[in-house]
Amino acid sequence: MYDLVKDSDQKTERRGIEQPRSNKVARRRDRMRRELLDVAARRFVEKGAENVAVEEIIEEAGIARSTFYSFFANKEQLIEDIARPFFELGIAKLQGLNECKTDELMEGILTIYLTLWRRDANALLLSQYMGGKYFPLVRDLHNRFVDQLSKLFERLEEADLLRNDSAGYTARLMSRTVVSTLRIYSDDPKFESLFKNTMHGQLLK
Image 1: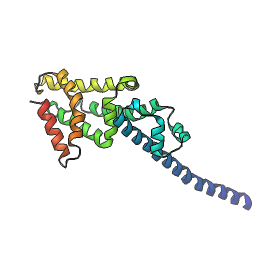
Image 2 (image 1 turned 45 degrees about the horizontal axis):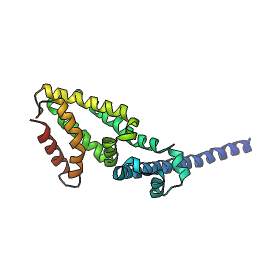
Image 3 (image 1 turned 90 degrees about the vertical axis):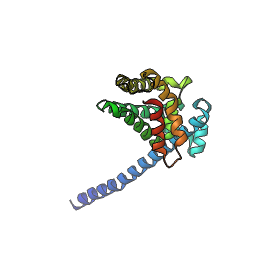
């Protein structure tokens, strides 16, 4: 009986040792995956996704090819894993404005863009400017994001708050200027106020 208890205790102790080790490995793999996503997003923004090879990302991240392919099947999956979560987060946050007062909508929209920028500027840039052969990877979420944003602009149009009196024009202006405006002001100490004041002045009466 003594030996059985002792053996059981030893097994429990071993399991206790193994569990932290497993957690440590999981955390290390999570950091490696995050590093790959960060490196890839930056490279894609700098050169265009179609001009970046998987080998470049592997080399900069300092990992083995086998490690890369243990996370991602190919470059397409890597792009999806960068861009799709951003669209999903943006859609969820825009939906959260559905109950917002109309005169507070633009402030809420701009705050969402600031949140996304601060979370990962390169991922936002990639999501915003992705086109060509890789756009189909995110088309469904892109369209949902645009639809949700357009509904909010329609409320602003109905309330006669838009400078150009058109939800459609405002949506097009937003898509073409919001991220470039974030980039222009991103290093300024008054980043948030400059960004919001510029966008308010451009879009609202």
